[in-house]
Image (cartoon, rainbow, N blue to C red; front, top):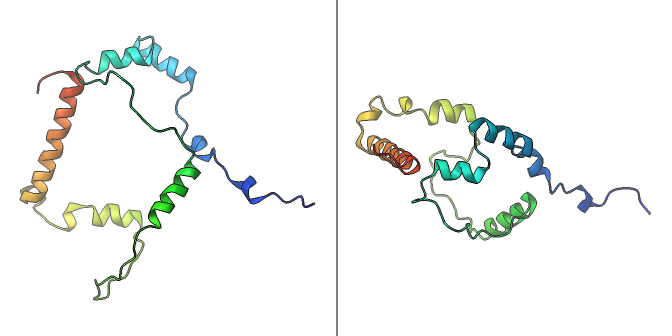
Length: 144
């Protein structure tokens, strides 16, 4: 018999938990003590107006591991139909480094000098600001 591990032994199903673990019970209690509340439920009651809180818990499916989620997502992606690209003119699929995306492609100074005055972009920014203001109003129960 071989001493080599089986392929299924190498799957790290709890890797996600180790990378994305939240605060522990001691950390949570320290935060609650600092905020002078007894529980997270009490914190939510003091923070979110009852008019916008759900009375019952969300109907969520049972949790699955990161690996199971990736398998399901790959199966869904495998259903996609790959079509021939007709872009042409020297375009090729490339991987753009994040620093270029952040500083060139996502920087409005590169595509216009008058971003605030272009109606499409200004409208989007105004809508985002309105949505943010409305969310703060809903959460605090205060008027603008």
